[in-house]
Length: 119
Image (tube, rainbow, N blue to C red; front, side, top):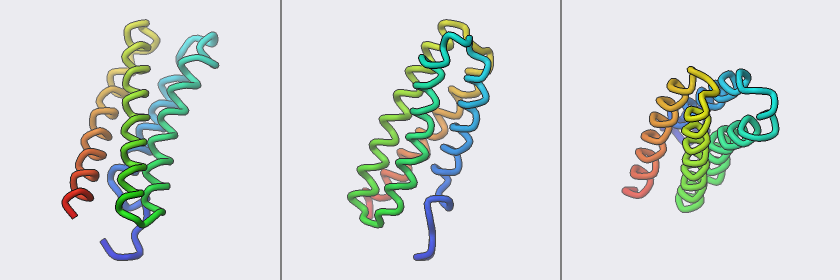
């Protein structure tokens, strides 16, 4: 990567964007009474993942970047827990795709963190 790279060049950010989009699509199908419940929580968590990767990359300090990646990973865990609950409540058959995207983003975040740790 050149010194001109941005968060948009990171595979983790790109997949987090896809995850956020998919989260919005899937939660559109949830019951209307969940609008301020799971729908709101899941969307906020998904956007938080994306935002924290971007903010960390913009800091340009390895330690700060890693801190924001850990926050993103925490938001990913929140989204995973909410997705499991929504799945158990049978809110959408499309949650399986969301679960797969969550795993993929988790792998990319872990890989990015490991790369930053190793120098």
